[in-house]
Length: 281
Image (tube, rainbow, N blue to C red; front, side, top):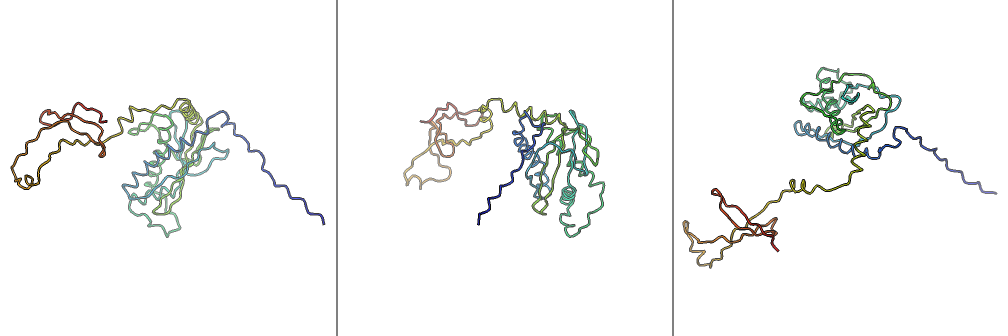
């Protein structure tokens, strides 16, 4: 009996290349995704602190938009360099409203979604505007938060040009177990602008800004003004009002208990100051 020859394992064909990614630093987009996640995290952090929610930003993916755009409750607007759009899932908008107006979890056992209200429309507009502004700021667009020029209108489609890109943002709320999404759609001009900025940042040499670090790094200095040695008998004889004659000499300056400098003590406008620092060896 002849053994059967092993079957050949089927191989998947070569993955087609998207011409919108050729010759462009798309491998740097995760850097932008990380920055966007931090910016949106700050946005939801304010909601967490004020309304005791537990929103977290999950994974963020950036990819070219397919020929069939996702249908839904898009908020679309014309920005300075092209059209942008945001789709926020209704579950996220309702959850934000529930925390803000104090009825979080009230509809947990109700399978029928509530009727849409004007308050929900305002919450959807606010979330869409804030999310798009976060992305546009990181891309390099000037956004005036006090008087936003971006006016959003509802639409069933993002209505963007061919070659636009889609940013998918996962959002979860731990208190209610919510898993939801935000979708941001950007005109091709914005993606081109973003990729150009990322490429320029990569080509620039990485030089540590020591001056900026020195301004931000704060250390607590402790000055040991003097040490006085007294016999135990004299120490026990001390009474309130007694004076101990001392003379200030060179002072030790410590950081976290470690001696770093010696300095002189001077008086300026009724305050004791340290001057003439010398490195301690």
